[in-house]
Length: 436
Image (cartoon, rainbow, N blue to C red):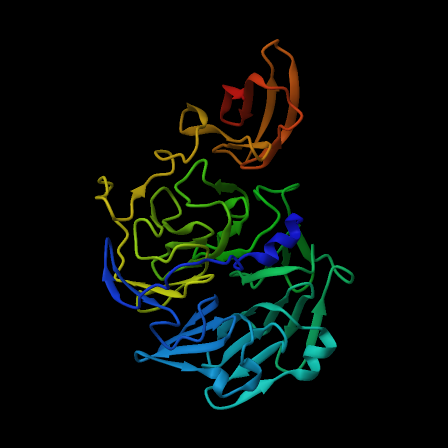
């Protein structure tokens, strides 16, 4: 299986065992409620889309569309035959209260609570099968991301399609879309990120930026217009000048495969991964949730969304929906009691051995991924010049312009001790690194 086709299988892991019980569980910080098909009327256990609104939450599953409001579930496959046993990939609620539904086979469907609007002719003409994301920009234009179909815009009357064949979109395999404060569309794909300002395109990949991986399932933009990317190689942020990367080697992230990101009303990042979920303040404070330290169902967390009432919703790929209410980010750093989520700082809790050195306020860290055949370097500056010198004093690898978190291929390097020279605008470091 190639890396590019692997992303299409994210969320399809088959898990066995008992379904999660729908019960209110107070454990650690906040109260949990779990929903699955055995204990509630939710339409399916494979949660692919979540869209909270003022009255409840819409949930898209591989078996159709469900709605939770006032403590009761409604299965909308009963009201629209096209939603029956249909995979719902994405949901968006707009300012009018209309829910936009992205499906596998029937493109985009609108529902205003009474009437269904199906765009059948446009779905066929523009090949809008496997709709992956729907967002609305500041001008009211709807942007639709299609797996293996590019991007489609709809202003209420005109439809327009963008693909790599007719523009500088980096790939037609669309994974997520977000709109920034300048109304630019940030489009993530299986080959990097493209940005469209309604006139021209700019693209970011591992070759020209600090992205840790070209497969980017998720993007969120915070109140300061900083872009946060969820990749298969960890979490990355970009403020327009500087890139930063967090992964299992330099942070408490439960897994490097990030499936979704949401930013709540307090500015906290909620991160869904293949190994659990995490909340991050964007600086150095983390709380991690797994099946071992919380009632969160075991397995791949595919979606995460926060609502205006302070609830946080997690979609599992096979075991239903979880809601966490009443969570408060800890303001201090005591050791967490057993069974409660642990809050740690990035520098205090590396998930694997790493060599590091510090000068002034900048830490340089070598993050080994030996089984995968690469290392990354975490630096405080956006770029650095890096050299690898072997034990005989010979320089065997030089990277004149290294971007923070970029992968360095070490498959062809001989085993042994190396000195890694890292030179930034703040100074120069030399770190011993043992390639075992």
